Length: 167
Ligand SMILES: [Zn+2]
Image (cartoon, rainbow, N blue to C red; front, side):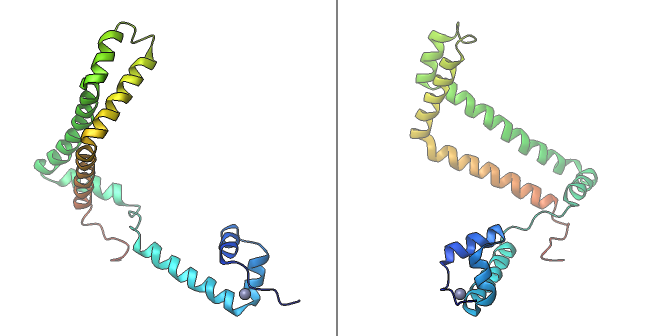
């Protein structure tokens, strides 16, 4: 077998994904390329370790068990979190609908709303655009805050379950 030049790394990694290819065949016999592949493998391993570990398969069961044994206030906390989330979504939709442009379009088009769904969609979309251009940052911040708080709540509920890194 003649000595081939080392393949482009992009080609090598593409074939690594596919699991076969001439570059991979070359790497098997080439110390430089197999070193690169090994380094890549280790790095990928580290990345997987750094990435949030998947919840343990018993997560739902342990959360439900904890919720069942928790005193009422904590259960209420979960429900109030969900309620806040839902009402903020509904409120957000309300703001979209109430915004001037959307309201104007809806006012004239409300009779034909059912047959002209397009008008409604356009109204909501223009409302969303107006809202986004004026309040985009605030809306994004509120949504991110809600997401984080509900995640934090879930994590606290699941707190007693050992994470894979602790196990
Ligand atoms: Zn090589």
